[in-house]
Image (cartoon, rainbow, N blue to C red):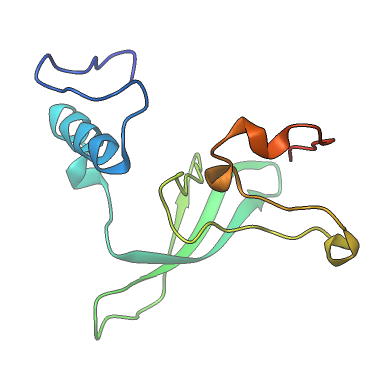
Length: 126
């Protein structure tokens, strides 16, 4: 729940909303604040790099995922938020160098659903 946008009275969900409930809430939020026209849907980001040279910001390269429109484009932005979300599937699990030698279990946070999974184990969270 965003501080400046409380759940409406009509919005009923458990303490931990489902993916579709979160989606509904975010759509309500985006409509209330006029954000949808600022979002570029169906876009694949191919590269992200800091501007550097004492400049703040990010250079993004991307293209549309619409059939027939794969023209590469580039834009600069002041800020970058990488928000893949907890409801994306399959989860991306980057493997650290040497992880194949690790004898334990490697989990993504979305697959950790019961604290019993960690009971009696030494746990590292990255």
